[in-house]
Length: 590
Image (cartoon, rainbow, N blue to C red; front, side, top):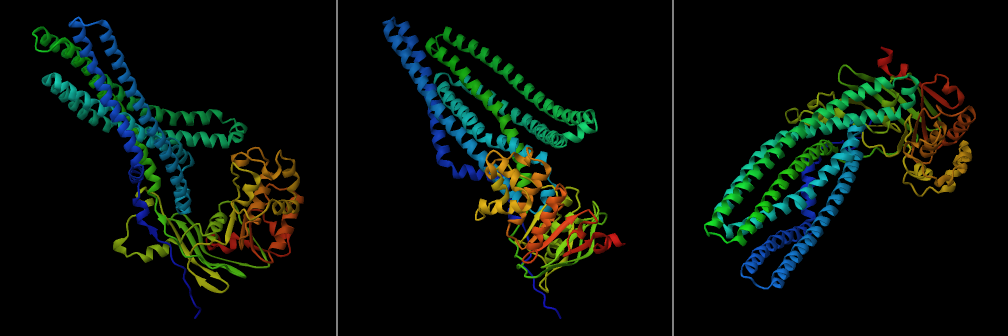
């Protein structure tokens, strides 16, 4: 019986899914508590000193009533102004600390999202939409991070100002102070109920914004196709539908917010004038001196405005909470624990009885067998949609063996998968690896590299795009291989040669130039198994032949698989071994 060895199987980490975005926000607050404490102390100082500065009004009135020298009243006025100015200095310092913490949280959250997206299974990443991801990373992260500024620099500040002002009002006239406090608490309760409804429409507007972004990005990438087919009207109508959904959600959210603030402002104006009448009546009866009456009226405005600001910024907090929920939707994607690595083979790599499907209705591969040998160049040929790309991703270990994970968990402990909860079919992968004659049942494949049919260039230099972090590869080695492939001339003609920075996607380069850079990347990767998908598609005849010659040298020490839809591709090289998807995929045979 053939010996069977198993790599440690990948398990989905439940703990990773539980580490949601609200926990990320609260962890940040715990970590940065010294800075937040300093900001809070500065803001508390602002509230106390500003409230204290109002007391100078009463002193000035008393001096004027006592017919004291005018210079004394002027001096008190300067002291009150100085106290007010010093309070604003403290407010500025506290607010700047909150701004710095806001930007720090935004940066950390964006890095956390990118790190998480790099760690989630490839099948999960494929289900995400580019526009939605960009809307989350750009917009939602900033709105979520702005909660630090909203809560501390706006809400906390005005709550402290409200409390200090209310205490001073109690010292002047308790009854009106309690009436205003009761009114404020009642409005806070009503405001919270309204914000619950507003939050729903805020989240819808963010979802709709992601749809709009997705449409715009797709249109920009395919603008040449849009113009060639005169489809501008169709694209604009499609964009218009998504824009109307966005506008409707924003309109409803703003309508609720406008009604909420209008009702509050009308009611607060009524309370202000009622307070003026009441305090004026008390002044006429001699119950309160006129200096304290003026201070009380100033404090009424000072206590009403903070309450209004708190309510307004609570709306921004509602936006931030909705944004954190969308961020959490990404961070809750479960991350596999580290899988055992398949050992690097010396001579052969084979897949046996591989089947892959998205539910029973979408069978892509059925009982597929494939074997690659050192010294041969495998050429995988098949029509579009035959499963070539899926097979390449399986070879690179991008899809874990879903059947093994299901078998590992008892039936009663299995939870519905994330895809099932969202109405999507989870994939199913079955099959075995055979490395140098030994059977394995899946694991990480660090010795394989896959160059997709549409290679992606990043906003960095050509050298960095080629080595992709492997700085042990020198520029001289890159240019030497570029010379062999016929790519050295165009690289030298660039403004800074191999150190020229290209735009994201390589928009300033031709299709053939982008393909050559991608071919350099895979050939200099140092991996045992090289998979090149449509590596010849954008090359002329001379450069195709050069690439074949380089691959012929590489196959003596590496395993090479070329993927193409051209049926005559395998005849270009005597050492090529053809794998026709119509033959090796039993689904196609059936």
